[in-house]
Each structure stands twice: as C-alpha cells, then as structure tokens.
Image (cartoon, rainbow, N blue to C red; front, side, top):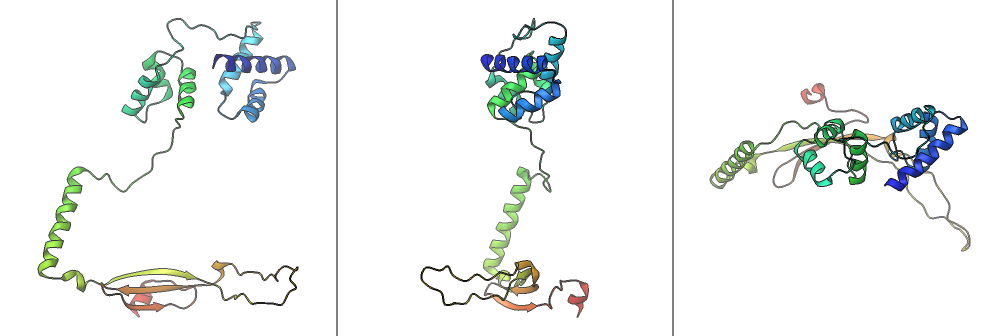
Length: 218
C-alpha cells in the first residue's frame, strides 16, 4: 500500500510541475487507475503541500493517530451499526477518515441506499400468521371452504401475427430475412377466474382496453 501511495505522489508531483490543477490531476489518474484509487481531497492536500515548497513524497506523520487499523475491529463496528459514517469510525479508532476509506475499499465495502419494505415482520407477527394458517387448515378439514374460493386476475397479452415461411434458396446462400413486429405494438387484456379445479371463466377485452369500474359494472 505504501509503495502504491508513493507512486501516486510521484504522479501528483509531475502534474504539479506541469501546471495542472489538483482536480485535473485527480481526473486523469482515476481514468487510468480507477475511480476509487484516491480522492480529490487527497490531491488537493498534496498540491497545497507542494505550493508551500515541501516536495517530500512521504506522508506526514500524525502524532497520536496510528495509520494501522485492525480490520476485524472496524468490521465489528460496522456490523453493530450499518449506518455509521466514515468519520464516526475514524473517531472511534483514532485515525484519519482517509485511512478508514482506504481500509473500507480494501474490504470491498460500499454504502448502499436502504430499500423500503412495507413493514418489519417481527417474531410475534410470524407466530400470528402460523396460527391463522393452522386454523384455516383445520377448518378446511371439516368444511372444505377452500374449494369454494374463486380467484381472479388480469394480465396483458402481447403478440404479433408474423409467421416465418420457408423460401427457396441455394445451398450456399443465406435464408431470406423478414422483419419481426415489435411485441408491444398490439396487446389485449385477459381477465381470468379459477378455482381449485382450474379455469372457471375468462374474457378477452377489446384491443388496448383495460379493467376499470365501468367494465366491472357492465
């Protein structure tokens, strides 16, 4: 890791002497080494250091802030709070946030936006669902009410009427081509109802017409 950072420091010094800006150097380096190789803030800090007349390519030593991080300890912190920020981790481990960013990239961790779900299924809810299913199962053994249930649904049916045909060609000639109509150009709505035996009734609505209150009331 140290040799890689030193390599980047040489490149940044080259761009500095070339008259490039920190943002330009960051963009060109990331195009070659990947977007996560270093941050733009790091490039700005090194350019600031060069402008002060310090051309040393070694990282500055930070007193009281060790550069080494125990990955297992850091993973334990993240596991205990998946929403914790990089700076909060750095504060707990007494290191810089750039050090944490480096270790997080090495561990292959990324932050993803949480996905909304309707509700959290707790243990009590799971137990309730099991009890309800068991009640229905026992009731159906005495009174087969499930056989009286009819279920309905609607679905768009998309299709085209282009059929492939055989055409005469020589052995060394490719087959004739025919354009295929896109599937979404024609579609109809299928309404279907079924019970435990199978389909009870189905209906195909007129082209491009969907289910609404008027259709159900007819």
